Image (cartoon, rainbow, N blue to C red; front, top):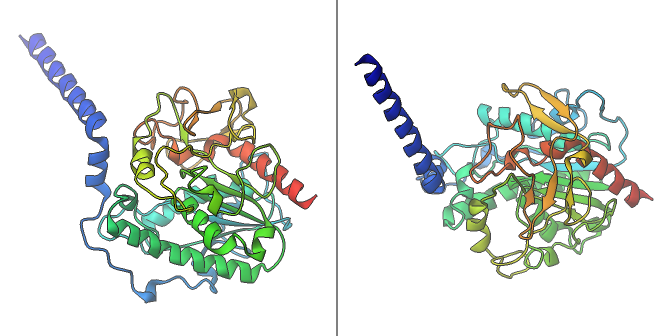
Length: 369
């Protein structure tokens, strides 16, 4: 009897796990919206909370900061003390609260995540010069799960206002010389708007060595024509835009499709049905495929996220027809923080960190040459 009862308990537990798994696979987008989308009206944060970009504390990274996380580098790599270029980096979403639509710049949990992203992303550029990374009142994660909600648009516009002011302060402090623009996710979205509104057709456009707008869908026909720079087509090409979105296989980009299909591009055309930009980070060329043997180094996080191992030849990359970057089967060491649909969004930079570092160096060399 005891053995039979034990088997019943195991059967019930297995059934519950299966039910949860089926429920998650069928309703994951709805469950994520319930968990992260604010139910409160949009309200702009007070002017007193706005970062003052004339003050060092308004920056996550900039020259002279003692605790600059973008200066981190793994063994075998080192940041430079020479300014071959200045890098303006806009971090991804790290504020997850649903009590408001924009996060304050002093939220401790958001800032802890911000530090991790700066180390694993912006550090790829620290061999070229100083990184400038503003703190800004981000739109919360839920704003991107309710893209057609008017409150979401207001939150994103509010966040962009901070980024635009930070970019003006960056240009005032660095009035000449090459610039690399880099971002991820929400940060890339704000970068693209900066390109359209503050770079395209302006004198500063001639100073842009390369743009890394990673982890955000960019339509080749509805967005690129309004950005003033072409897609990077070949390795080492300068004055162009790099972008990709990483998925293991089988890939399900439903969360991206929900935004992409219902939105209008920067050129004023619908994005629905258009191809997305995919520059292969292993080759530096638009489209195509590369085996894992061409991967110079992936940042594989420790379980506690307090350290990484750099492992070469771990992850391949192939630009698929739709513009997604496919990395084959899920790689070992990345079980945590993979988003629904085998979306490796959180690791877009880390998967190809060493190649990205070399890619930026090659594009800057072409630009300077």
